Length: 175
Figure 1 (tube, rainbow, N blue to C red):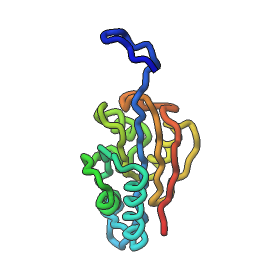
Figure 2: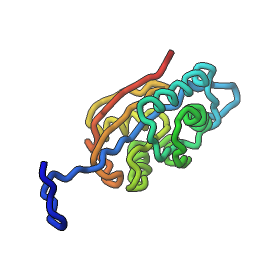
Figure 3: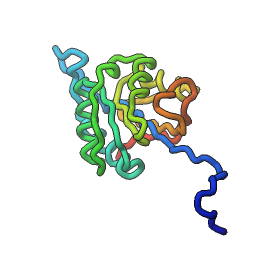
Figure 4: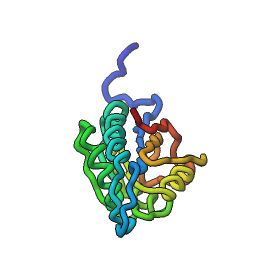
């Protein structure tokens, strides 16, 4: 293939960056008596499953740059255990909008992601995550505890909205 002479305009296809949004529902939580919803810890099964989520991320999405996480105890614990398995050191932000957030609240958080980031994780709760997933892809979806949905798009984070992305992968890491 011949090289173009210097200073000639490029007339080939425009290649847009592929972004990945990884939705993770927190691992299985416990319901200790006298503990309010926000402070519920992970159950034994959740403590075992959360590192498996991280191992799956390490194998399949090693370049995570940003994590948006609900400040609730079970989501923080999920990311702490999963994130320990991830080779990257992503920026982690605990965002109040994610706890008990609607799809619109979660969209607002996503739209604020840095434009230079290509892979972001959102660790949250149902029903908001399932509503968000349906909104972004136009498809109904179910996210059980410890589940992962990877969405792919070439659009900017700031443009997140109806049918903004396609489902790339669903996973529920277990041994």
